Figure 1 (tube, helix red, strand yellow):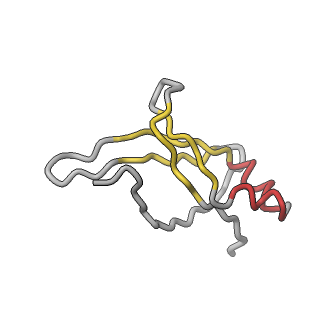
Figure 2: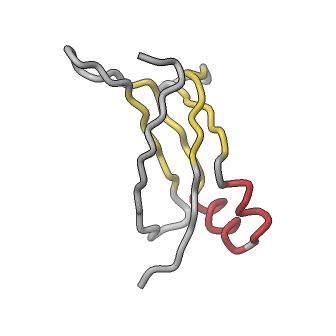
Figure 3: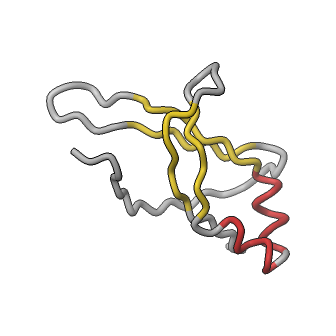
Length: 90
């Protein structure tokens, strides 16, 4: 158990509609019971795509801290650091 977990997970997603949102759902890990949902991070895809077209702005999306929010509330449930990158894949 730690208050500062490290996941080091890498995911690739295909962006079809830049008007949407990237939603990251964060869970804890429990050995003897079901994992509990900690909360969500919502990131506008349009901001990520636009930033990727401006090199200096893209740096703002790499290794950035995001507030984890619980459903239906503005209460924060901690933070998560994400590194986002946009690439062109055929």
